[in-house]
Image 1 (cartoon, helix red, strand yellow):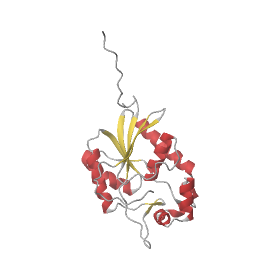
Image 2: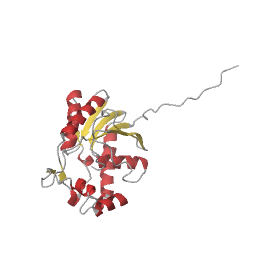
Image 3: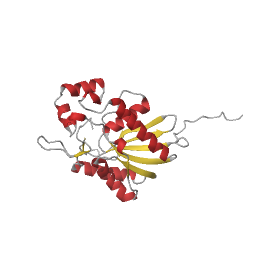
Image 4: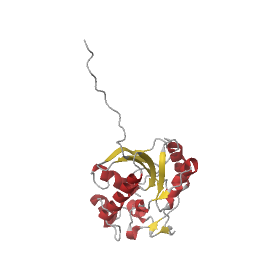
Length: 231
């Protein structure tokens, strides 16, 4: 008697032509200190990495140097460039700048003021979280415009790298937006990726597939990461 045919659970395989995008949140940046100006780049807050963030950047390199990466992307803000630097030094891939994956523009709250006002439970900060819209902040980037530029940047990267894997060093708000678009979830559903964490999407012309969110296995269990659920 013939053995019954078995149908085993299949492992995920990358669809033909798809791009795998590893979204790395930058390491912890320097704290906002009252009375001290934060560097700006084209109007965006542009602090450097804190020493804690520099350690996180090395741990990211430890995790990713064995990946078969076709490209490394950074944004126009220095904290992503500095986070990518240890990996760049090891694998020898010159990073490309994708400016459209910079963080959401916060208008009058740029220069890291969001950290202070969130900690103080400013009424606008509470409204922002309740409505899940950055643009309740005066002068902030409209939510629809932010979503559109992030979508366009991810599509462009995917089109450049069919059947390849790339690492994208970016920001917490950007990662949140990418995963919200991939899952059709609320805008802030994925807000709060840890500094130095890795999230993972597979992009095809038909759909975006979430494979990982906030992977911190490469960060040691005893390593203190400042609770900072924002950008």
